Amino acid sequence: MNPFTRIVLPVTVALVVASTSFAAPAKPASPNKKTAKPVAMKTAAIRPFVDAPHDNVTIEWWYVNSQITTEKGRHLALIGSFFRFGNGAGQMAKDSSASTPRSHYLIWAITDKDSKTHQAYSLADRNTLEMMKQFVTLRMLMNPNDTRASAMLDTLSKDAFPPPTVLLDGPATVSKAPFAVAFGSGDTLTPVAGKPLTYTVKFTDLKTGVVAANLQFEAAKPAMYVGGTGNTGLRDPEDMKYLSLTRCKVTGTVDTGAGPERITAADGWFDHQWGDTWTTQSAGWDWWGAQLADGTDILFFRQRDLATGKVFFPLATFMDKAGKLTVTKNIRFDEDLSTLWTSPATGVSYPLNWTVAFPDQHLILKISPDVREQEMPIITGGSIWEGSCAVEAAKGDGTKVGGTAYMELVGYNSPAVKRLMKAGAAK
Image (cartoon, rainbow, N blue to C red):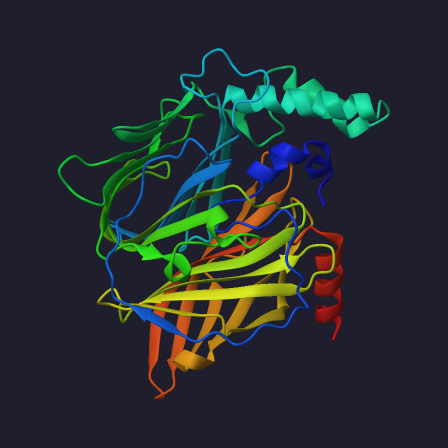
């Protein structure tokens, strides 16, 4: 575990997730517990997509990704996640406009799949800064000889975060009626008036002032309720809600430094998740959001006990072209440990090529990264791997279908997982 992760435990709980994607319990279920094989479930019911915030939860986030082709023929991928967390305990920044003070954090990144380059950003508000000061000060009171805490507090006292995280240029606000998200002046998520399930998303490079992405996401399918119900808590299923718009038409412009380029083709993905029972102190996960060329979208993941490295709770939710859902836990995950990539920045190793089989659906996915270096920085000094991937799907009738995906790998800096990766790669 990264040293900063040990310093600010409550802040780490809220910030080490990148995106999105999944919530873990305060104490994971035993990975050795055997359960009956679930029966696949099908539903074609259309239920509303909930975008507005919830005031009675510990953590909430809005996540987007997109695979983009520009007018210049460039192939890019984008990810962004707006987090808000906490229930207003303790000192908060005076410039917060939230009715109940909360902390806010944003990560976003652009990957150039042609040049194999990746640029990631990590930003937080003053509420987060003040909260971190409190917890690090408490840590020092408990252990005055903690040099890591002392160094971190020295940075925070200068109104700065550990690099590469930077302070937002203004307060973060999340409003309910009408729904809108604004993190500082340059990063926003807002619905488009008069167009259901359509949102404008903007990300700005604060160093240059360039609007790096000005996008519109328009849902092409009804909302996916992950697991069929949207309930994904582990200790209590209703403790976490998870909804996705898995196939969106994306339009707008991107600017990677050479001026804005119009988007000519793009598929997008939009998640909203909120709840209470989760922690990355005890659990990590592997997560994918895949879009196949035949119109099938698949959201699938598994949990990992970070103390032992053992995996548990696999879950996949399929949505076909017509919007019908199929849910299964019968999944086989095989990571190719010969493809371990070790980050030069953090020293963490991630398995980047995977084969994932869904026996009930007679489907096998082969997943490979578009760019190996797609590690995302986290405010406490840790990291996750969150990146664009290519997918080759083989069906039971022998046909093959191409596709794309975003993959998220969380918890690979734990000692137990590191040992497993090293042992597996040595075989």
